[in-house]
Image (cartoon, rainbow over all chains, first blue to last red):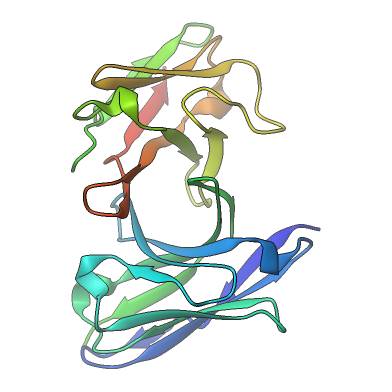
Length: 117
Length: 107
């Protein structure tokens, strides 16, 4: 079955760190760019980061630059998001998504990150 | 938002729903549309302005011209009730952007 499964979401204090993981299966992971997209409580979708097939090209939205880093392990078919210096406004559901030809054609079920004291 | 969507659209069952996505010269870019039902992950329903991914009903169609892209859902059913988002690659900022979303209510 073609699927993406996220994990690692948790409650963390402002200024803290968290690492999200996404396990891919059912498709050739090395053939695709991968992405993280988040959604704040009651809010819309926001693209967070992209990474190319070999991990050498990475792009992050301005609001997380210098704090979040996207990475991947092709041997494990896994995508990661290292989040440092977390802020209250980073709270939300984080989705792993497959990025193909300009759009997100496969999504995981999401993992919840709560930043609160 | 760079992309402007109406916050809500309401339509009776069997009627046609049109959800717009406004942006400067959006007709020159490729627009993609997602459906998000309550409590679920988003689902791609239209890619490249008007292409339907496998498994998406023919009732879903898209168009894009000038400053407006449009998602059209014909013969609306209760199961179409969801939030809908447009998305494109913004070349000026080199970022992927989403519209603010439109809540479709089936009366």
